[in-house]
Image 1 (spheres, rainbow, N blue to C red):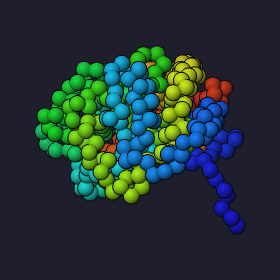
Image 2 (cartoon, helix red, strand yellow):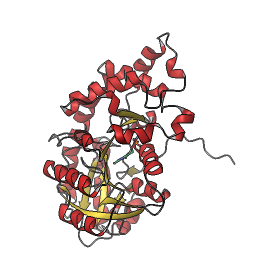
Image 3 (cartoon, helix red, strand yellow):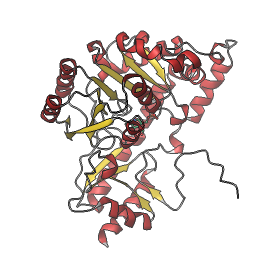
Length: 377
Ligand SMILES: Cc1ncc(COP(=O)(O)O)c(C=O)c1O
C-alpha cells in the first residue's frame, strides 16, 4: 500500500464543510496573475535570482515592497528596514532562534493564534497570556503582568485578530510601545490581515513604531496572494535587523526566496497585487456580511461581533462545551475550531471559531444550517 500523493495541507472531503479552516479557497488563489508575473520575470535575460541571494533579500523586490507598503500605510517605508522572509511562521521561528533560549518567558494574547503557540512550544518558551476585549489587549492586565515578570517579547495579532477578529485600538498601540520601551521587551506584531479591511480601516500598522527599536512587524503574502509562495517580510529597526541578517542560516543559504520574490516583484510593480487585494476585499467583505446575517438568523444563541476585516468569526454560546459541539458537528459533516485551541490557559471552552476564507456563500449557508441542527438536537 502506498501513501496517497498529497500536495495540499488541508484536504476536506467533498461532502464535508469545514467552516473552521483558515486556508484560502483554491479559487481565490490568483493563478493567472502569478503565471503572468512568472512569464515576465523568466522572460528577462537576468539570472541573478537563480543565485544565492543577498542576506536581507533581493533589493529590487524590497524596493517594490517598500513602495507598496508606503502607499498602503500612509508613511514612508524604506527598503533598508525590510527583510524578506518565507512567511510569518518561519520568521517567528527564526526570531525565536535568534532572540530567545528555552525557558524564556513570552507574552501572548488570550485568545491567540494557535499555531504560533505550537511554534513557541517547539522553542521551549514559557508562555503567559494577557486578556483581550473588543479593543485588543487589556492594558491594565499587561501592566500588572509586567510588574511581576520580564518577558522577552509580546506576540500579538493586532489587526482583525485570529481568532477573535478584534483590532487593537490606536490609543492602546501607543501605550503598548511606551510600555515596551520602559520594560525593554519587543513587540512582535503579526500583521497578516492588515490589508484585508472591509468596513473600517484599521489603525496604523506597527511598522509606524520601528524607530522605538522595540518593534518587529511581520507581513505575509499568504493572505493577499497565495500561501504556497511562502513569502513575507519583516520590518524593523537597524539595531534588530543586524542580528537577523548576520545569522548562520543566511550566511550558509543566502537570503530567503530569491526566486519567488523576483516573481512577486513583477506582480507588485505591475499593480497586480493592488488589484488582487481589491478583489479579495470585495469577495470576502460580502461573505462577512452574509455570514453575519445567517448566523444571527440560524444560531441566535451565539454572541459575536461582526469583524471589520480578516477571515474569522469568534462565537460564544454560554454554557456549551465547544469540543462536544465539534464532535456533533463532525458527525453532521461540518466542522469548526473550538476556543480551547486558541487558549494558552485551557480556557475559552464555550467559544469557537468559524472562517469565511474557504467557501463561497452557498456552502457557508449550508454549513451554518448543518451547525444549527447540532444546536437543535
Ligand atoms: C495570525 C496568523 N499568523 C500567521 C499565519 C501564517 O502565516 P504564513 O503563511 O505567512 O506563515 C496565519 C495563517 O493562518 C495567521 O492567521
